[in-house]
Image (cartoon, rainbow, N blue to C red; front, side, top):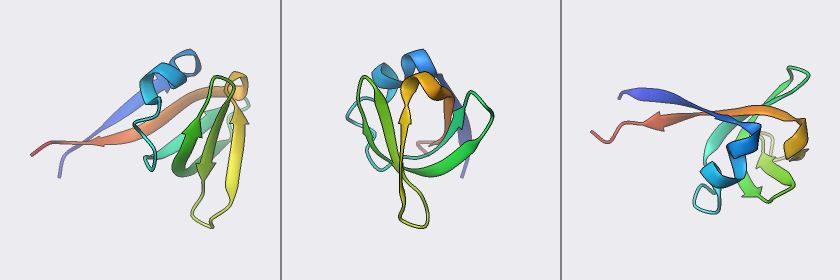
Amino acid sequence: MSKRLIRIASKNILTELGTTSEGLELNAISRSGNTCFGKLISVTSDFLTILDTRQHKHKFALSDIFEVVYDEKSKF
């Protein structure tokens, strides 16, 4: 199955992910370079919340995020 990496800059996170991407597996990369992997729970105008593989919630201020990266699966 073919995949394509999608990179979203912090200023576009709310408009790109919105409410339709709940459950999407993604990597949140902070401005300090730390990366957190998990499933998207919610996105607001101030925060991005994800659930990691150990079922722990992580809430990031959008101003602290450098970018979000996820795999877009091909349609075929």
